[in-house]
Image (cartoon, rainbow, N blue to C red; front, top):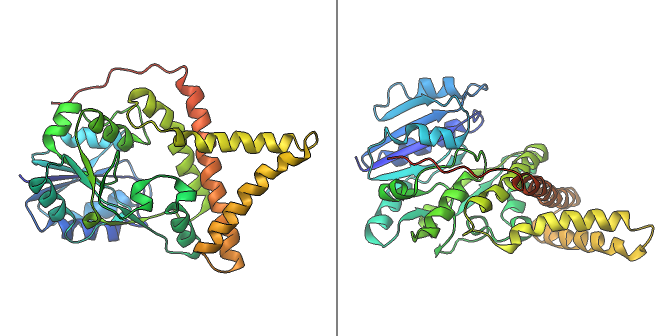
Length: 326
């Protein structure tokens, strides 16, 4: 078997049809097997997948009772037979030659893991602004797969394809992480001397959350689990990961100090001015600019508050030995 594709999903009914069709079409180009691992969806995703996979011979639908990606991927890994292992998800649209291009890169270059940039897509006007903010350096910092289309070596990449021997050597997902498990695994890859390439030939369309509430939950969890990732593997640690947390603290201090130090308000004003400038450059109209400023703040403060909570939690948590899979 050339390629095994593992697709952990949960409550993806809004996007699963488009994502599923793109996966099946891309996988049909080569010898492959596909494992859809449903984390006990309660929105009809499991039922949809059960019907859709009935007549496709190389598809298998599995229930992940633990719900989260780490468990779902690890649960089926030992059932896979592919020389290459792909971990993708159900709210992304993949180009027709995604897997072909990935395997050609792995076969012809000294690369161990490959993935591509993720073009963020929103469907509603709010979703489109959220997508724009998520792909802007002011919104998400130095997240290469969001802000760059250039081919380059990276620390982490979405929807990767691994050489099987890489995972056999370093192990699978850390099941203590329900978010950022991809970052932790990819940091571990690089820390062990493996190379991760981001190639524009593997550009995907990532379907974003369509409202600020869901976006806030997403980024809060990203922040919450990031300190645990760094406690487990320090390779991916960068000082800019702390910026949203410091920004939240400085914002809070500037507000409470206004009665004592009037010019402390300048910190918030400077932040709003930069946010307005970047919003104006990327969006048009008062409604769009206002919402863009709000989304930038949602990303920054949600991630920052999650990071602070996660950092405090990590001070007291015990890092358990990672389970190995053969």
